[in-house]
Image: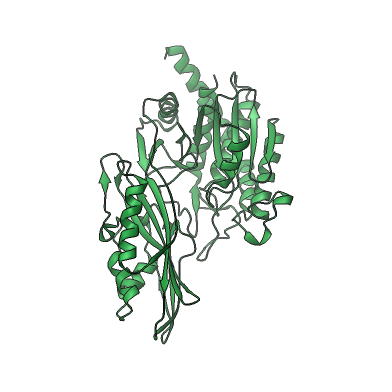
Length: 438
């Protein structure tokens, strides 16, 4: 890079930063608008014929996204309530993939889950970090580049989906209609650049259940979140409480289900076996015969995230994130063997192989340059257990939206993003678009 090019990039970065400071109240207003839409999957309002394949809330959120694209003067295309795209110029060289659906609000909020509440430099609300806050940052990055008349010589595309949290049927549908641009990043992970994602396995199991002392168990609500409550009914009514966190980060939570199993002193064989397979505070699945780690991705995680009785059966759910030197088939065989030997039947099993993009690819090196410019420090590619929106996209990486040292309560009560991190998002994405489309 020449001295003149570096100076030009620094001047643009300064102009963009000033723009976002001037318009930050408007940015917060847009964030409040989209967070106010409860876009969690809603089976009761699904209507494919009316463009609501994931319920009314998801469809409303995508309509909001389409309206923002129209305001920006982009070419907007809607995909039957599954996704919406907005394109700047023809033949886009790269795309930004984000989502507007969220996980259910759950309990335990200090602030309203469906509003953007600013308090002491922190913005609270469901989706503030995953992925509504980053989506607003991407849209405002485009707005800044257009209004500042920054030369954009190559095309790009923003794709917003409505079912990332429910299994990415949105993007599967989109890709059957339209291919991705050759380069894709998502603001659905971590800075500096997340180019390596562990494999994932979600498994549900069951077995006949009867107990003289326990009439019902209710623990966990979604398979990819550490449960903060486990209610046990029977001769005694007990509520075990913990702390919720994302399923890929069990160390940030306190599993209420395994706390119950740890305290259990009865003679029910199924519960006793589960307590041995999933000891409280064991994060890596070693007691199930797992416990793998590698140099690039670190230790795997294995969490019992759901446990419930229904119609004479005990049902459970497990979230596993495993290193890239292992295969989905290997991990699946081990955990199924451990469960079946303990008397459980496998009800559902699905997963993904690990995802890796070389650190020397054009997309990764460009985004790392942007990170260094905006953050003021050199960054290196990182690996995580979270499955981002580009996990099954060849060459796709995650660029933000949070930093590895942050705990933004993703998927938990009081999910939030700091003002400083949101401003980082805005500047990262605006400079990235300018750099990739020069």
